[in-house]
Figure 1 (cartoon, rainbow, N blue to C red):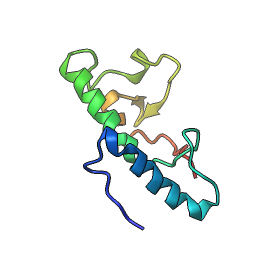
Figure 2: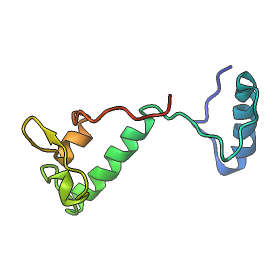
Figure 3: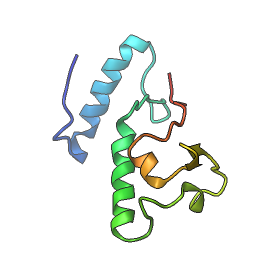
Length: 100
């Protein structure tokens, strides 16, 4: 079953949720607001866009060290501290800790 939510509006949400529940038949459990969903790499583009807005506003810099904003993150990449650009370009080398 395939469907598109490209043009879904707030009024369409009951139908979108109904379709999602139909897809859940394969899982044998209904989908609820508490049901975890695997997002895979979808969140990366939204995170990068948010970072782009912050960079444009001068609140963070591409070459800033990640530890400047997250002091508990002390990770090296190529013999140097991890930079914001490493995260945006997805070259940080961080392990995948996603939902399987």
